[in-house]
Image 1 (cartoon, rainbow, N blue to C red):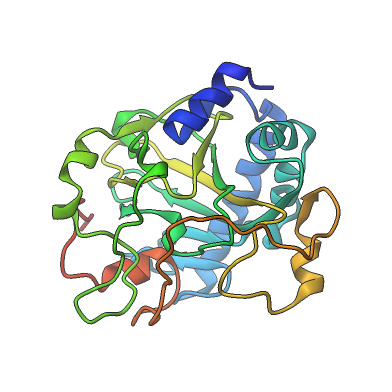
Image 2: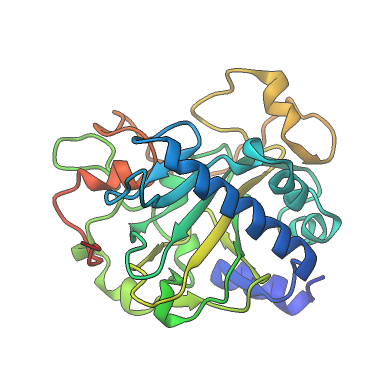
Length: 289
């Protein structure tokens, strides 16, 4: 599905965009499921195990900014990450043994979709090695106007920036004053609906508020090499192995000399990245009213 040139680009830059991975039929099925999920948010008034809500959410006007762990919410999301085309790409990038670490569906609705401040995924879930990446499935056409994910090439081989606040607790974002040069070099991950981005777990990234009149829904999967074990531990080995996407069970983690800063003490505001980042005193992106 991807050329050797794209594989080399991923190694060099820590991010690539692959067009036309998701077929039109699957895309329409996902959109139908997502519409049903958003409609169901009318029944809730606060965050749940499924919904992370926009601050302006009301039952009369449901506004969802994230579907949590969609692969557990509806089988179509598990189907996508286990599809042969996705597995073939992952195998060329980090395979052959693969494990799903987690999933989420970030929704940027027209005119108010919440931003995500600059961060590295590695700060949230460090592993024994960094053969870990995130897939971003574009469920809508994405351009500069509707809040694309911005990634700074080459940062996946550099330091792990401090993601802690002045109180010493994990804050889930980097002080933007420390990364001004990196922010200037960031590139947008854009494309037609059905395209997928792949970014390294240590790549610096963020995204602005959606100021357009179009939605920007982005389905994320975090995938690790099967011999990359989370440093925060494995609470349920059977559940851990149920997330294998390719290859056999592994009980010998591969240890690599990679920089690590643990996300501890935990954030004062628990929940999604939006909740964690909201406690920070500094932000880079303008927030919707």
